[in-house]
Image 1: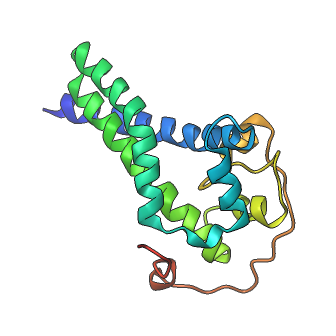
Image 2: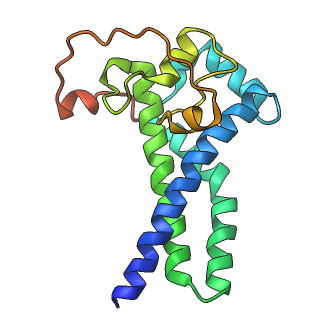
Length: 169
């Protein structure tokens, strides 16, 4: 039984990892006008219409096909638990990105897990070539698209309640 849960956990981490890379890569493709260029242009013009649920649905619908193919492939080779874990990891990452993206638009000073809220800065400074991460900055750092910009978080004290005060619906 322990081996099954190990496969689920490995699949989950792999799904979340692929989700994080997809978050970065898809954002670049939007800026290169390969996919959803009009929608993305409107998002840069009017980002206030976003909420966690709406984004989560977009991310899941956009990623469920590829994630399902990976899960099916793992099932086909006899690693169903890894496939289930992969799908769960990809969906969990979609939820995380939807939350982090909304937080960066509404309360960027609360993005405590990064030194600078890169997506907020991406919008604030009109960056079309830098800071493509929505929830994390590590792929920007790995691929050389990270650009540190000044950000004064100020003396912020916050609670879990503050982190949850964003548009969910």
